[in-house]
Image 1 (cartoon, rainbow over the protein chains, first blue to last red):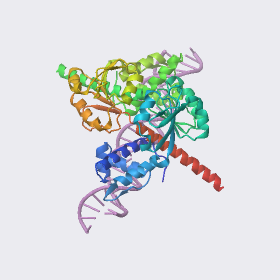
Image 2: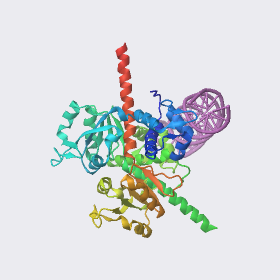
Image 3: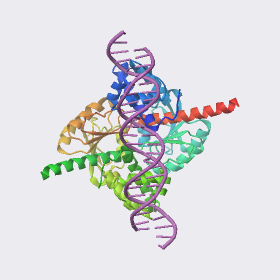
Image 4: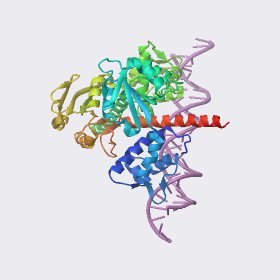
Length: 223
Length: 223
DNA sequence: TAGATTGTTAATCGATTAACAATC
DNA sequence: TAGATTGTTAATCGATTAACAATC
């Protein structure tokens, strides 16, 4: 598969394509053009074709794209069939919510176990996932290669836990804490899910809209 | 405050600035240059100054930026002091996790109440937030202006609930369901928190890194 | 075949970076 | 004052869009 300088923007659009293709499949649609796909996603057909062309030729002239085939290609590009392993650190509310509701296997991940410090949790299972003591984390990491650590610990310990994960060869951290973990030279990839960043962006857009509406009303008033 | 065609990229960086400035404050740092801020965030000083200049002149030549003053400016830009109202729809795992752990007030939001269909939840409180019946949602929306609806319902009902929210004048939806809600002509803003999109992007980056490492190893082997 | 639609090259647009006069 | 650092203008870079030959 060709993979040359793919921009971040393209990569961030791939999961959206995947989601849309799944939706189309659910609706029994097996063929789509870049034009129609663009309509449904609010993108230009050009952009969609450019995006796909980073990875290969998935369409057919005069026909468009075969939905299941394209879906499979994008899934492969995203690494869904690589069988990545994951562990979850911190079985609090968010940790539990993820273990309960988030289907790791649907996206090709194997959630092998979780870690926590609370004695009443250690040794139990949650939705089939065993919970171990944080004391055993280092030993576990040394014996089992972990691709992604889901970080759902309290923010106070986020940096310390991150160091442990990095030192023990975890490939990547999926960070749910509100802490900026991105270290310039760290060998560990970090993907942030910052709830507050998301809400604050929304807050900005709402503010902007209210201001515009108020300005408009003021202009009408003035006349 | 001047507000002319601010790009999406700039807006998405604002919450990061805010977070960093809070961290600096915590560490007792009250003054910073765009150079130093850039170092810490992995951005160029130019970009930081350009970003700020969209909204005004917050620095001082030869000195830099006053941390608390800049923090206050960015908070205002983001609308933190506007007292936006929020309601949460769907008190499942994620809903509970947000009500329990996410400090809405820290970001200027007032979480007034939540809605659910489960009889055992209705009438109770969760972390001080009352839970009402979904049957009363429309009536509530008509009587109380709601700025942001936090959507944490099962995906099956996401679209139906969204329609209700839109029809009853909710300004924006903070969407935690894995459903693409963005409608081209909807008057309701949508901000998505798509866990799976985030994990899949990470999956791509991990795949890429492993491929590179394997390719490197193969080249060494060959020699 | 004719119509449709791809993949790709070229043109445009926008965002980032560099440079520098202004000034604290 | 001299050094530091801003805000802004100009230059560069990269991403998106448009156009079109290729071809199913």
